[in-house]
Amino acid sequence: QVQLVESGGGLVQAGGSLRLSCAASGRTISRYAMGWFRRAPGKEREVVSSISKSAGSTYYAEPVKGRFTISRDNVKNTVYLQMNSLKPEDTAVYYCAAGPTISGPFGSWGQGTQVTVSS
Image 1 (cartoon, rainbow, N blue to C red):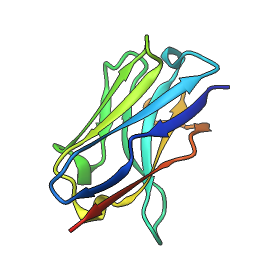
Image 2 (cartoon, one colour; image 1 turned 180 degrees about the vertical axis):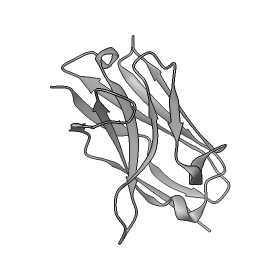
Image 3 (tube, helix red, strand yellow; image 1 turned 30 degrees about the vertical axis):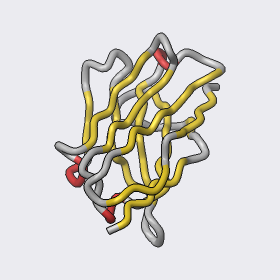
Image 4 (spheres, helix red, strand yellow; image 1 turned 180 degrees about the horizontal axis):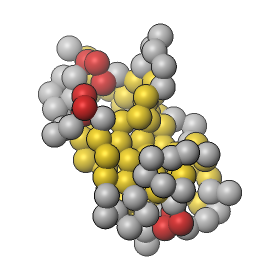
Protein backbone atom coordinates (compact mmCIF):
# COMPACT_ATOMS: atom_id res chain seq x y z
CA GLN A 1 0.00 0.00 0.00
CA VAL A 2 1.16 3.51 -0.72
CA GLN A 3 1.86 5.87 2.19
CA LEU A 4 1.07 9.55 1.73
CA VAL A 5 2.35 12.59 3.60
CA GLU A 6 1.00 16.07 2.94
CA SER A 7 2.89 19.29 3.57
CA GLY A 8 2.74 22.94 2.66
CA GLY A 9 -0.25 24.05 4.66
CA GLY A 10 -0.26 27.15 6.80
CA LEU A 11 -1.84 30.50 7.50
CA VAL A 12 -2.29 32.89 4.60
CA GLN A 13 -4.27 36.05 3.99
CA ALA A 14 -7.18 36.10 1.59
CA GLY A 15 -5.93 36.49 -1.96
CA GLY A 16 -2.71 34.71 -1.18
CA SER A 17 -1.30 31.43 -2.45
CA LEU A 18 -0.07 28.14 -1.09
CA ARG A 19 1.30 25.02 -2.71
CA LEU A 20 0.51 21.72 -1.06
CA SER A 21 2.68 18.68 -1.65
CA CYS A 22 1.86 15.02 -1.17
CA ALA A 23 4.91 12.78 -0.97
CA ALA A 24 4.33 9.09 -1.52
CA SER A 25 6.35 6.10 -0.39
CA GLY A 26 5.98 2.36 -0.51
CA ARG A 27 4.72 2.28 -4.09
CA THR A 28 5.06 4.43 -7.15
CA ILE A 29 2.17 6.84 -7.61
CA SER A 30 2.24 6.11 -11.35
CA ARG A 31 -0.02 3.18 -10.45
CA TYR A 32 -2.66 5.50 -9.02
CA ALA A 33 -4.97 8.32 -9.80
CA MET A 34 -4.49 10.94 -7.09
CA GLY A 35 -6.89 13.28 -5.41
CA TRP A 36 -7.02 16.20 -3.01
CA PHE A 37 -9.87 16.47 -0.55
CA ARG A 38 -10.69 18.87 2.25
CA ARG A 39 -12.74 18.96 5.42
CA ALA A 40 -13.78 22.29 6.80
CA PRO A 41 -14.86 22.67 10.45
CA GLY A 42 -18.34 21.27 10.91
CA LYS A 43 -18.60 20.07 7.32
CA GLU A 44 -18.31 16.82 5.43
CA ARG A 45 -15.15 15.93 3.56
CA GLU A 46 -15.35 17.03 -0.05
CA VAL A 47 -13.31 16.43 -3.16
CA VAL A 48 -11.21 19.36 -4.32
CA SER A 49 -9.41 17.99 -7.33
CA SER A 50 -8.13 14.77 -8.86
CA ILE A 51 -5.71 13.74 -11.57
CA SER A 52 -5.36 10.60 -13.65
CA LYS A 53 -2.33 8.31 -13.56
CA SER A 54 -0.71 9.93 -16.57
CA ALA A 55 -1.98 13.44 -15.78
CA GLY A 56 -3.98 13.33 -18.98
CA SER A 57 -7.21 14.11 -17.16
CA THR A 58 -8.00 16.38 -14.26
CA TYR A 59 -11.11 17.21 -12.26
CA TYR A 60 -11.84 20.31 -10.20
CA ALA A 61 -14.71 20.97 -7.87
CA GLU A 62 -16.68 24.04 -8.89
CA PRO A 63 -15.61 26.21 -5.90
CA VAL A 64 -11.93 25.93 -6.85
CA LYS A 65 -12.06 26.01 -10.65
CA GLY A 66 -9.75 28.62 -12.07
CA ARG A 67 -7.94 29.08 -8.74
CA PHE A 68 -6.41 25.68 -7.95
CA THR A 69 -4.17 23.53 -10.12
CA ILE A 70 -3.34 19.90 -9.50
CA SER A 71 -0.19 18.35 -10.90
CA ARG A 72 1.95 15.31 -10.38
CA ASP A 73 5.57 14.29 -10.78
CA ASN A 74 5.70 10.53 -11.05
CA VAL A 75 9.51 10.57 -10.94
CA LYS A 76 9.52 12.44 -7.62
CA ASN A 77 6.52 10.38 -6.49
CA THR A 78 4.78 13.60 -5.47
CA VAL A 79 1.48 15.29 -6.18
CA TYR A 80 0.92 19.02 -5.84
CA LEU A 81 -1.99 21.37 -5.38
CA GLN A 82 -1.27 24.99 -6.28
CA MET A 83 -3.85 27.18 -4.61
CA ASN A 84 -4.17 30.80 -5.72
CA SER A 85 -6.61 33.58 -4.85
CA LEU A 86 -7.39 31.85 -1.59
CA LYS A 87 -10.60 32.69 0.21
CA PRO A 88 -11.58 32.27 3.87
CA GLU A 89 -13.97 29.52 2.80
CA ASP A 90 -10.98 27.49 1.62
CA THR A 91 -9.98 27.04 5.26
CA ALA A 92 -9.89 23.30 5.93
CA VAL A 93 -7.70 20.31 6.52
CA TYR A 94 -6.51 19.13 3.13
CA TYR A 95 -5.95 15.46 2.45
CA CYS A 96 -4.17 13.64 -0.33
CA ALA A 97 -5.50 10.27 -1.51
CA ALA A 98 -4.71 7.52 -4.01
CA GLY A 99 -7.08 5.34 -5.97
CA PRO A 100 -7.52 3.32 -9.15
CA THR A 101 -9.28 5.98 -11.21
CA ILE A 102 -9.76 9.74 -11.28
CA SER A 103 -13.25 9.25 -9.85
CA GLY A 104 -12.08 6.89 -7.11
CA PRO A 105 -12.59 5.06 -4.96
CA PHE A 106 -9.68 6.48 -2.97
CA GLY A 107 -8.42 3.92 -0.51
CA SER A 108 -5.10 5.36 0.69
CA TRP A 109 -5.05 8.62 2.62
CA GLY A 110 -2.56 10.97 4.16
CA GLN A 111 -2.88 12.52 7.59
CA GLY A 112 -3.82 15.96 6.27
CA THR A 113 -2.38 19.46 6.39
CA GLN A 114 -4.16 22.51 7.80
CA VAL A 115 -4.84 25.48 5.55
CA THR A 116 -6.17 28.62 7.20
CA VAL A 117 -7.12 31.68 5.16
CA SER A 118 -7.67 34.87 7.11
CA SER A 119 -9.91 37.66 5.87
